[in-house]
Image 1 (cartoon, one colour):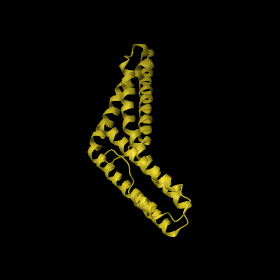
Image 2 (tube, rainbow, N blue to C red):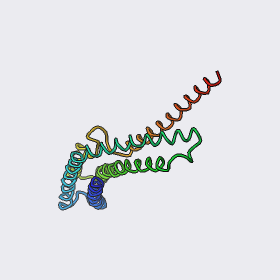
Image 3 (cartoon, one colour):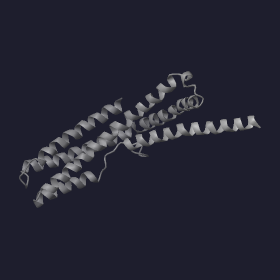
Image 4 (cartoon, rainbow, N blue to C red):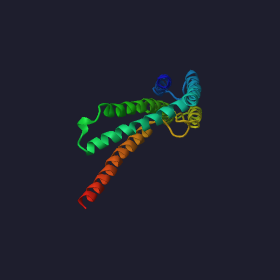
Length: 205
C-alpha cells in the first residue's frame, strides 16, 4: 500500500512538471523570456529530485516488491492446477470457489505493483517528449542549447521502478507474467491428458 502511495505521489509531481512544460510550449516567442528559461532550469532540477525519490523507493521497497511478486506468482499455480484438472475431468462444478477467486486476487496484486510503476516511467518519459516538441518549435540558438542540456540531463538517468534491479516493473512484466501463467495452465492440461491416454492404453491391453 505504501509503495502505491509513493508511486502516485511521484506520478502527480511528474504530471505537474509536464503541465509546466506544456505551458512553455504555448509561447510563440523564441528566445524564451529569461524567467521562462529559469523555469526550464527548475524543471530539470525537480525532475532530478524526483529521480532521487524513485531510487530511494527502489532501495527501500525493492526486496518487498520482489518477494510479493514471486509469492503471488507461485501462489497462483496450485489453484490453476486444480482448475485445469477439473476442466479435464469435467468436474468444474466440484472445484471450490476459492480456486477461482485466489488466482484473480493474486493477479490483482501483481497489477497493483506493475501498473503504477509503469505510470511513473510513462510520466517521466513524457517530459522528454514535451522537450522534444519545444526543441522543434524553437529557432533561437541559446534557447535550443538550454533545451538540449535539459534533455541530456534527463536522458542520462532513466527513471524506472524495478525488482532489485533484476527487471523493470512495467506493463511488459505484467503481460509476460500472464502469458507464463496461461502457458502453465495449458501445460497442466496437456500433461494430464497425456497421462490419461497412457492409462487408457494400458487398460485396453
